[in-house]
Image 1: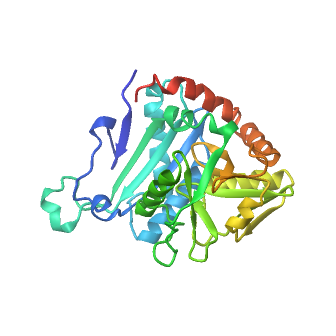
Image 2 (image 1 turned 180 degrees about the vertical axis):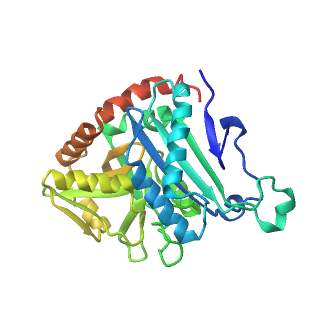
Length: 312
């Protein structure tokens, strides 16, 4: 199989050789913005939406990456094309990372210089979605963690950035509460915000509710889910959601780029609804599968069968 290549500031280098300095602002400050996009049938899904959010994030952190959005899109397409022979037919992630570059204090020893660093990598999604395959039927357990979301007035989560230690703390807390549990964060008032890298939904009486957009990442997959629901004639409410509302919901799910949507069947050690994926969730997953031209859950099962033996 061919070797995967990474776009690194206009050059293509081996994935194993793609490196930035330990004195880069990304490592020193977590000063980096990023995007992850995925493919279906090896075609990028909503790539332009992800790039538009990337450039909104760049404006927020005041980084000029040196590429227009059209140039970034062209570089992305070239990176995909160069890597297709090395993907063994799998769908893949597209990861964009943009750092501010090396710190001026260390400029003499940072070979990349102090200008922003742009990388684009393409990586098979075998493990990303294969390891979640069973969750499309069993669902996940969400627990509210002591670690809350960081308010947007401090660091705006709508800009997708790598300063995310609070996500990791929440994940550690959730794991201590129950092995395999996933973290669900709240804001300062106790309203649900998001998971650690995913957006949250509940359904009650056939209507859908998702948290307000103040202190969350406005996910591209969140937007896709809302669009599919509205196209299907469902009512969608962007609202303050309390833990009480989740306990009283008929069903719940989360969305993220790699897995699209996974049901949440337990919340804080109690079943949501009847403890199984609900009809609203199943209807939306079916509509999403139809939009992308493949059975999303079936693909996850296929990748799950191959994940253990697959080597990056």
